[in-house]
Image 1 (cartoon, helix red, strand yellow):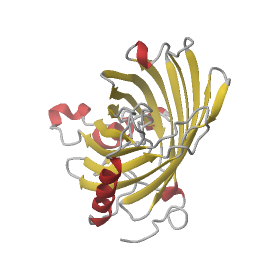
Image 2: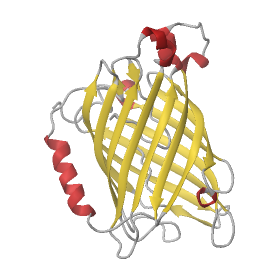
Image 3: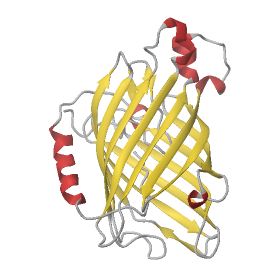
Image 4: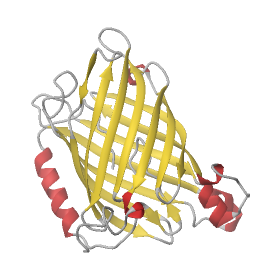
Length: 299
């Protein structure tokens, strides 16, 4: 349940919004859905824009990007980890963090640690539609002084996903297409720190869906399990929009997935060279459904 939290973002009113979101999450009814599945559609755990489902899973990710700095361009290498634990079949708790190296390790350390809750709000199987709500917090002062902010950021977030499996037969080869999106105000607890609005979307074409639910082309592995996609994570703060366009692909099976994407900055403020993201993801609710991957409560 990784999130697009831009570090410029933030301001006080966050606590009340977070509390209201938590009450809403826990009060809603429950229904079991593994990962992000709606009908025949499986929404993969994408790398920059979070998927609309919940699961018991772990994510390891590496990214590299060059961005403008006060002393010229600087390289930023980030090793990110996250663990999501199902509290119920619809409610997941996440914990995560990042180790960041700037300018070829001249500044390095842990960024602030993150916690979050995410609730699967609605699933329409026939129309391959899914929606979730959540709240994510970056905990100020928990990371390295050289890397992390001293203040916290709280982000109430909405996630949606829509597969095109309900298209008519004349458009059958567009049925493997899916779109996901997320949107989140990022609200700071630091006096005088600016808020941001983080948002993004993905466009995916699932070759497993094509093979299984449209027409089998007899593709061999690993091609039969690939999902080519484009992610576009964006952030608006201080009157400026930053972000990247990330073309890539994910290889997925029942127990996990691997992915790789390029990062193409949309403007100079977003980066100065093409970057890369590499992901490894494990689905504990399928690897060990009766032990570590089991929800804590059967609600």
